[in-house]
Amino acid sequence: MPSLNITFTDEELEAVRAAAAADGKSLKQYVHDLPLREQQRLQFVRYALSWGEQQRAEFDEAFPDEAPPRSRREGADAA
Image 1 (tube, one colour):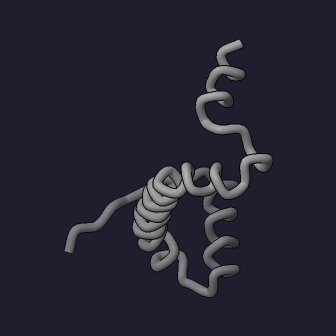
Image 2: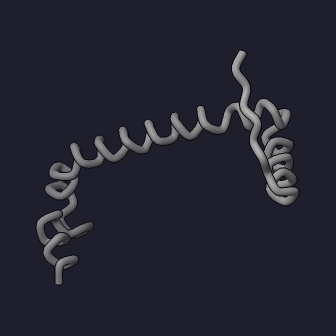
Image 3: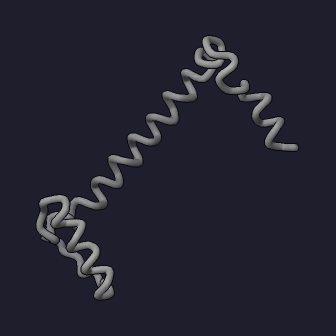
């Protein structure tokens, strides 16, 4: 099975060990899971942004005083 050697400073390694212990995992399992969790997090964020954009018009119509419509918000940012 492929493996990977990763170099940490003493302080970094201690922080990673503490995070692994707080998560109830071995150091090896914690470091293994990090890129997988990051991939899942990014997938969730992409979906959430997409969903939010799909709902924007409905939200703006239902709650006109909550946030300015996108076109006005962009115009204000440009000023």
